[in-house]
Amino acid sequence: MARKNLIGVSDDLIPPTQDQAPIVGSRPIAGLVPPLRNGSPVGGITKTLGNITSKMERAQNLEKQLAEGIAIVELDPATIDGSFVRDRIAIDAAELVKLSQQIKEHGQQVPILVRPHPDAKGRYQVAYGHRRLAVVRDLGVKVKAVVRDLSDDQLVVSQGQENNTRTNLSYIERALFASRLEERAFTRDIIMAALGVDKAALSKMLSVINLVPLNLIEAIGAASDVGRRRWMDLAENLQRAELDVLLTMLLSEDMRKRTSEERFQAVVNSLAKQPEKSPLVVPKDTALATWAPGDGTVSVTFKKSAKKGVIAIEAPEGPMFAEFITSQLESLYEAFRKSKPQ
Image (tube, rainbow, N blue to C red):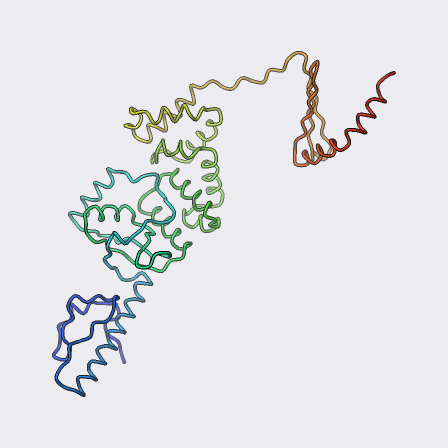
């Protein structure tokens, strides 16, 4: 038997017949609303059972569409939580005002993507659409959403890919997103898929985050016009900077009024003014000598002055060699004593 209404068209759009009373205010997923009884005892029961079966099939079909992300529903924003991985440093207030005006005039044109909350029954979790959700919540209306069953991997890939194509996260926000995913033990393949980058680009992103402290990044802001090269230059030059001085400058009232790009440039200018570290000055009475075996497994540096001698052992086998020398100190010292002229 052919099934009608396979794309989930609401029964509200189909005129009621004499055999089927209209269902007012029914919800497609919440449950079944039994039709009104008619006067025919046998035929009425048969038709009632047919209506129930038909409605169950339509409900099941709609549930399947929701799971596949085909149907768009309206949800109460109060039942929706944000993603478990933050992808923005902050939501730009000016962008929210512009988006709010668009939704007021034309309605929400693009639905957000959510999944049933994995830890809270009856709630949802956003994959993407945080700005639309914030605006709709502020307007006090329901949000249009696609509900889809997503694993954690699928959620972060959807979140990242949507940001890549629509919201244009800045370079440092994408790098932070990658770092947060790595902290949550997502594989490099999933992170690369979410960000749409290759292994080399991902490694550079993570290296920037490792070199630039998070509180400095947040004090600067998203800096949308600042790309990879300038962030990497900042990360390299930051090694000779005093972080407390930079943070004090960035958190001043005057600096907070500037754009994030201007704050970034202020940090660059501050670093350029700082003097280079002075080279190591070796006292005249200090002599330096180095030794390494042919295989290069250790590197020994010997420095001495009038009253002190210092041996530094480096390279992969350095600590093991140092332990071995320590265990032989008694015999070495005895050999040293015998080597001295009488």
